[in-house]
Length: 205
Length: 181
Image (cartoon, each protein chain N blue to C red):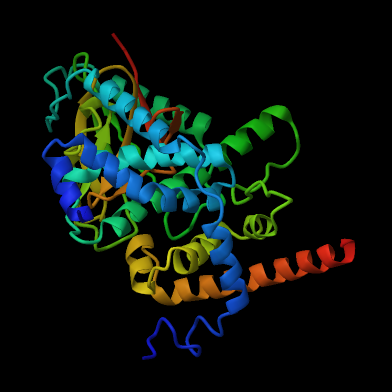
């Protein structure tokens, strides 16, 4: 039975079977080095221990802090800070798959005690995305994460979380299966976690 | 025991069930990662990332009976992230070393003794990805579309172009090997 996958007259054209055979033979040869699986499981266990030792997740609250007296000046300083961060860390994304890129949208800072209300927003290329969660060291990289809400006006997935001063790693979990980093937001390499997004919350006390 | 049954056991706290899932799928995932990143050690790093991502996302896994495709969706994503991160790293350190224009993130260090490794290293990442998913992993185009977010027509074109480029590079290498032989 001829299907769209096997018809020689569709977009795929005539399949060079000799090349396919070499691809398959090459792919089947070799294999992971001895002990790779054990090392992977040991690494996983260390990551599990590390995530359990993190501080309890910050319970996100949407809304402003009570201390709003100095927010105009702090907001202005935050904008300058964010622009500086973006200028220092922007490398552009060249060579990445154009069909995959997420639109960059870094959160804005607002004032509030020692915790800062940080807003996250991301645009995803797939319209059928059903669930987006913000996952990071501030919520223990938990499977639940912070569910983001889709803004019907802009199409962006948005949410806020209160974060203490310091460096925070995060990423987005899409439909429970895809881990998406925002290529337009600052990133940080981590030996355990790989590439993640990162945000530095300033300590303005 | 099926993958779905093992997943259920993992959710029930059975650590050995996760080990079994890893043992069952690690080899094929590692080969895919290795074909993209070109280095065995880097492929192991990618796999550690994949396994952690799969472990934390397992509670949200709902595609019963299609665990391999679900795992591969994570793998494809992490390989892409690795290549983006590597591209940034190469550009940053090339600038610091003042060593001239940085190389594209798409370049995989070729093993000169392996014609196929060399041929794959010449492909753009999106072509390499399409060829591997179709002809090395044996996925149907609709599965590839669901996994990559790319339309079937575009995927077929990528496979076509990828195979054409592989054939050209291999023909060139085969001719050179014949002359040197």
